[in-house]
Image (cartoon, rainbow, N blue to C red):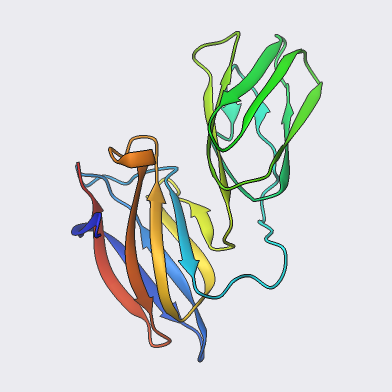
Amino acid sequence: MRLLTPILAALIVFATPAVAGNAVIEVRGPDGGPLVDAVVTIQTARRPSVPIQFAWPATMSQHNIAFDPHVLIVPVGSTVTFPNMDKVRHHVYSFSRAKKFDLKLYGRDDTRSVVFDKPGIVAVGCNIHDSMSGFVVVVDTPYAMKTDGNGRVVIANVPAGGATVRVWHPGIRARDNMLSQTATIAPSGYNTTLTIRR
């Protein structure tokens, strides 16, 4: 089922020789503006032969009474640390299906950690500060990235062939806040236009 319609965002895959290319994906909302902090994943038939690793740390700090980063992508099996950088104590928790946890009150310069052992979206909150919210997105693909301020990601070395492109954002009005579309990534490149529907 096509859940992304061909209007306002762009998916362009520039191929490198023979088997892999870079996916440059721009995600735009129904209003045409860039969708910031949307998580774009590409699932391919080829499973990773080595453990998945990302360039950013598996850390979600509490800083200025907020989770930083607001959205964190980690591979399945990651241990995520939750350091408290604030002068006040926090009680970090989640009731999400993908991972339930409860980190009781702890103070400044203290750290707790959680192992995320299955894929899914984990909404994180603070039992003391209701305004605090964050998301840990646990993935089983190395082809995952968060959109920047221009709604754009560059995912390197995506294998040619059939793929499924998924976009998750808490503001997407769809089941699990996620939309998906099948794609064929050719060595010669793949160009299409996508948009988020209301």
